[in-house]
Image (cartoon, rainbow, N blue to C red; front, side, top):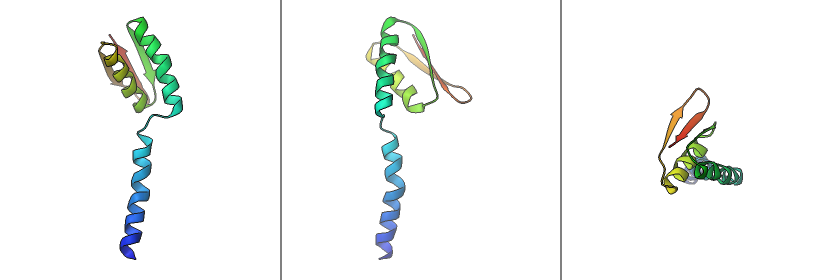
Length: 81
């Protein structure tokens, strides 16, 4: 019985961590808007979300561009070259 409770507790604590790493529907809409900015040329993008910062870097790579993430106080700045 104790093992079952321990397993349930472990699953309850780890599942939200894995679920939060997936981009949400709002993140996907953001990706669409940012991909247009990246396709247009050199740009700077800021976001408070680390997930979105990583998505922007991946978008830049897909478009054959380079990008660097700079951490600011409460946000991330992505510079796309």
